[in-house]
Length: 467
Image (cartoon, rainbow, N blue to C red; front, side):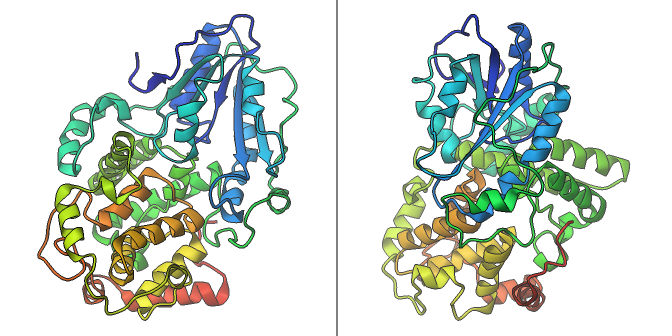
């Protein structure tokens, strides 16, 4: 069987069913989606139409306006593209905790089988652990998130240098476009009764009706949805790829793609990004190597880590040398110490760190290189390393559009030494890599970055927003 596909129970397809059901949990797109393609293939084999079910609940941890808005902004285009393919679509917005929570099971009751997304973190991982045994019908999970399927690797890899040659060995085999979605039996039935109609104009009203945290406002920089993802990719290829290798670590150069929120919510795939970057680079005589390293090797190392480490969200996942040095230095004296709420509201003595946190509050993500500094300083200024990790994860859960992602957990633990090596010993960090303000000033335009974030805070307008 294809390495992308995992049957998660022993049930057979149900005879006499009305459709095949694709439960779209993480890969919220009609394009370049292996899971949707597999569901269409099964529907054709069974001579049935295909129904896509996508839900958004009010009950996930730190549910708020920012996350809800980003997802809902993609629904109208998703519905349009699926309709063009002849695929049925049901989007259910569970607005209040008292609302129906059995829609999946109701829809599965008329399905020959359920296809869903294979994903190692967030609520998809929880669902895929307990739903297959309760659903009473064949349940298959498909990896549509990675270029090289997660199941190609049978164990945890320990660093980029161990996974890189294994990826490179099979990359050409997997770096191919997903074939077109062709359904032999178009969806002709009415939409299921649970369907919530979402348009470009009613998103804010729907969010306001939900029983969620309304204090975290939508991002001022990122609009959700497939169309926005495509605009970001186009802008990256045409204006940023040529400078990515040299400028990607300097936030004021705006050389990165800005696509991590769209990758997390599945509104674009790493496969189509890789193919687009490779094709554009070849056509325009550019080099895409560094971008593909981050997009494929580093990202898929994170998926491998969260797939094969049960404790991926805890300090217990760190290697032995880190455990030893943390135990030795965790009680070291801190020159500065801040409570979690002081970190959350950017109230430290360090103007660069405060600017990083304000970028999180306003934009909903931090530039990757500065996020390393952001995390290292939370370690340095927290009363314990455990509290430091708790603070980092809380802030990501609440504000980051690319939070609760394999890359989130891996990046947070990288600050503590994951996928790294021992360095010179010093207070608090022991032999864990240190990052300091002076080093950031030498390598990047710190004053320019602080001015940029001050402008965002003062005006509420992001001049670098891609419309």
